[in-house]
Every structure is written in structure tokens, then in C-alpha cells.
Image (tube, rainbow, N blue to C red; front, side):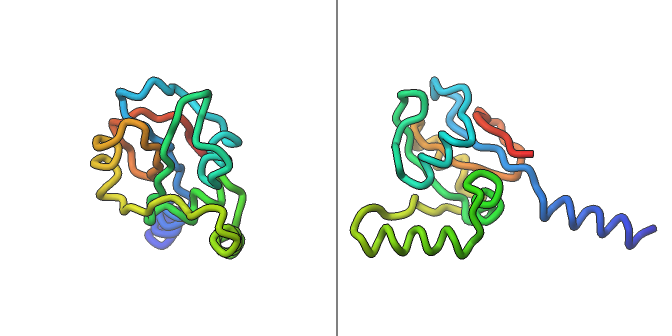
Amino acid sequence: MKNTSLLILFCSILNADIDVLVSNNNKLNNATKNELANVYLKKTDKIKGKKVIAVNNKDDYNEFNKKVLNKTPNQIHAYWMKQIFLGKKVPPKNITQKDVKKEISNNPNTVTYTSIKSDEKVIYETK
């Protein structure tokens, strides 16, 4: 029974839901998976006509890429290497889990994500 409980806990951590966040002061109330994918792949810098700045959370990076961008770590790495090589784009800035709240507070246009519940505005939730 104890081993089963540990296995369930471990699996739930591995498949954590990701919340995409903006500042509570941001007028954006929601986003689609497609809008977020376009912002995080730097195909646009707007969601519903509002300028946003995509910021990656290193602690939830692979899970976000899998659930929102539908890309494996190798695919996302290859995408950014190609963009950099062609001189087109650079990937979004990286922060850690502990910096999520600070980053959003410093710039209300920041959009980032976390697997930990936050008091910031959630504009998209993965399942």
C-alpha cells in the first residue's frame, strides 16, 4: 500500500498540470493553446491584440513544451538551434520557479507558467 501511494504521488508530480500566468494587473483574461504556442515559438508577441513577453520557467520547461507546444525536448532544442543559426529569433528568457512571482511583478506584460499554484491570474491551464 505504501509503495502504491508513493507511485501515485510520483506519477502525479511527473504529470503536473501547468498554469500559464500573467499579472493580476494585466487585462488579458484567457489564451488558447495555439496562441500560447505562437508566443512561445516567437511567431508573434501578442495574445488577443495585447503585447506579451514570453518567459520560460526552467523547472517546468519540458512539461510545458510537451503539453502546450506538443514538442519533445529534442524537437524544441532543434527548433531554437535552427532559428538562432538562421539569425531569426532567440528563445524566451529562462527563470526558475522561485522567480515567477517576481518576474510577473516586474513586468505586467510577462506571461510565464508554473506547476505550483499561484495567486497571479491564470490565463490557461493544461490537463
